[in-house]
Image (cartoon, rainbow, N blue to C red; front, side, top):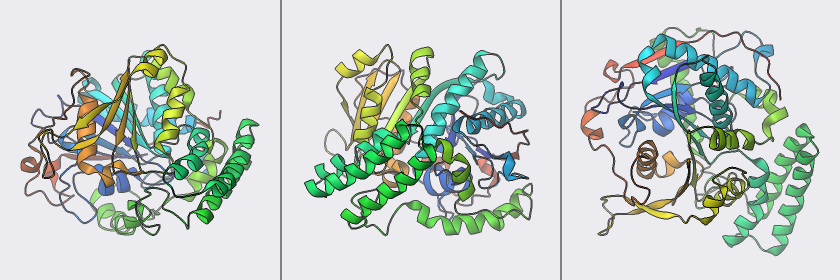
Length: 431
């Protein structure tokens, strides 16, 4: 498995600031490529400084997962994981090796972030990692896990496609029935454990939505359908990974060709693609002191916010009653070019126990892409939850632009870049 670590540019230094592990979605997209260059890394896909990179708040560890994606390669497809648990077990092994090689990271606060399908993997990974820490297998300070517009519960997400679109005045009652009929067939297959059939019916359901919405953008309802996501810009990233970057790193086999999306990852994970990870989220909330964040761009259809609220409402844990009674609070910037006396409204946070639910306004499936400033403020808020729950203004380290000044090249060693390949014996784990 391949990883890429950027030590934080925060003035406190990497030994005093948290470590964020980023898990990309798909499955099949590269976190080292897409998550790094298109979303939260220090520079974008054109080599320009990213003004709202998360590196200003935490060190960033990008892992190409599952094996077979990006620079993480397999000698045989038989080594690919066939379940979410299998992916998580590999990630635990990878992290354990990284921590052994870089022991200063064992004592820093560790946070797992996952987006889309990566959000589901992040939940299972956090579950597996906590157990490994509890048993003494891994030494790490796991503090939080965050799931962004995640596929944690396919049933809840799909069930809200029709009502969400109707609430936006996109479809009428007749179209709503068409979507519900297709979705209900898929849900029936899920409930009967016919997972391959459910995955096929999921595709069929998406087709029905496309027909009645004139192919509306799945990932951001206010964007044209031809501007799907920032994954559309991945061609330049993939060319870079297959050329200059591979040569610079020097540890990736020259014969390896990185794909825009590794389709085989989906093929091998198809048996669990439509399964939920609610048990892992419940475990984190009920049996650990790990903070859990669900963060949602409000304009996403495929992993929509109403669906996320519904799956959170369905969880059975000690804080469930308090969760239902709590009300969201507004979250504002301290200052903005569009500011009022109170700053600019970025979203809302609802908190109960060790659960935080963030709704980010004017963002779709990829919050860091659509609203990079709000995403960085949210990360700062989540990493610093020792502040009073009624704090209504985000505050974050303001030295980012100064720290990154004159460091426009991703290959600049002043970023303290650490890359590595972890060779692991892959276990075949199924649910």
